[in-house]
Length: 293
Image 1 (cartoon, helix red, strand yellow):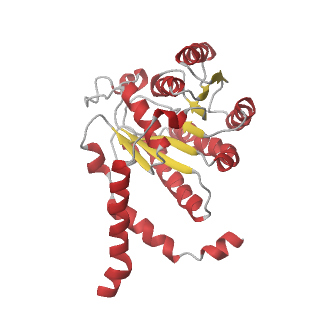
Image 2 (tube, helix red, strand yellow):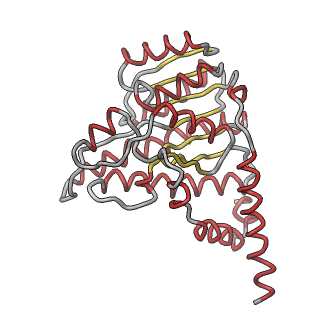
Image 3 (cartoon, rainbow, N blue to C red):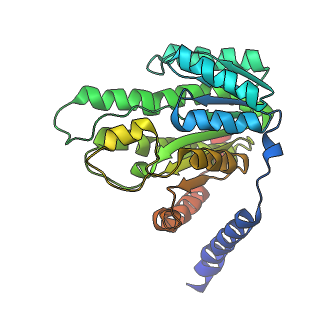
């Protein structure tokens, strides 16, 4: 027993203590984003638009995308007025996987590379009991999950070259089960499973690309408020502050960041048992054989 504690639990405890100590003391500086080449999806409104504006104020090169060309034009104009190093848009739908893949390639050409990919677009549907609408599940998975994977795959070569970062905008509903949102929740749980696994693979292969899972509560975007109106009464946190916290967490290369406007959400949702099991699980793999294949 003592040997087990010495070999496994004590090192794990030291890692966790070090992690919380250093992350608590590491400071974000706006100049971290100066000159960085950043893609923000779902940027015509809500959190995405606010992130574009924050990035512009920090002097980043900003590439935004969403379905509405007219709204994106306004966002780009505002970004330039706020001091963006450059600002561009490409309009399209993330239901189209071909567009998603081509968009990243075109964005890379326009900006001359990529430092940060912020995956923020989302499909909502009205809160309701799930009955038999398989198409609703499929649409949520396509937009909220599959397109995130396609965009990441297309961006990884550039991000490996720049030692960049991926921000995956998820939800408390991707960590905790809620009623009336089964298709949405499924897509968000999928993001956690896929990108947390990819993060481990990037670490093992020493590819210096960070993956930040952004776990958000209810935010006061028009889409979220409309979807929950009259049914869910939790306090909605401000999108402007949420957008800034996402940028901070991603720039600091945190594995996960939490934001719901309260001090309790992060402490309640963190699962140290899972983190310990993930740490232990990696010790059973023969990495030399996997990497050589």
